Length: 186
Ligand code: ATP
Image 1 (cartoon, helix red, strand yellow):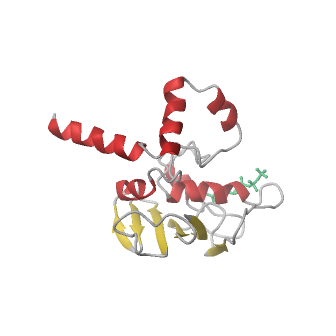
Image 2 (cartoon, helix red, strand yellow):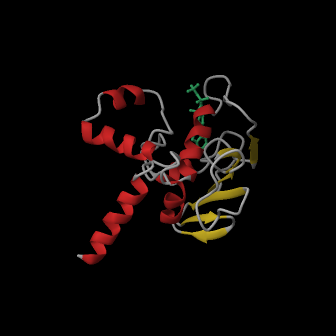
Image 3 (cartoon, helix red, strand yellow):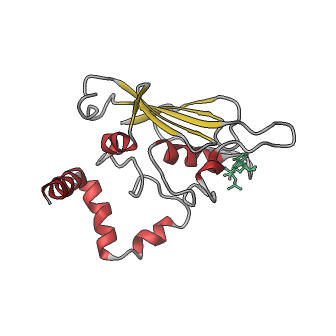
């Protein structure tokens, strides 16, 4: 699975609709201090379900919405959409396995209303999390390694490090399903 496009609109410093096309190989975001490089990283994490405002470098979730600048007024919502391609990799999980591209998006309004969508069909956060489980994309795993995180992984407690290994081995999906089933039985 590869990220092909990232669309940002009203997210942090990206007040106007901005489309980033991602090519093959390794991509880097380069720019002067404060130009919004980390905001792109935040947008990717946010779009796939990050719930911690702190991990997005804010106090509360509404801090991801463009708050205004000397020349622009604040806006009412933040929207991020990411398009993934399955070419040259594993197919997407069912029911999307026949698709070559898949779009996941998230929108947040100032009143706190939040929406996720897969291919423009509204869905729950859980559907997005399930879609990416065991792909390495998603919150609390090894795909997002920000400043300071390497040390955190090295010094993590064995149980925490095990979560990373489970995810990399592709078994956390089955563990989550087992937990859900156990809860239902109980
Ligand atoms: P550095 O190289 O210093 O780490 P960077 O390129 O990663 O910087 P970011 O931290 O991504 O930059 O962006 C910081 C900029 O984003 C600041 O100018 C900040 O004012 C702006 N910004 C962050 N959140 C918002 C928001 N909600 N509304 C408007 N601007 C925002």
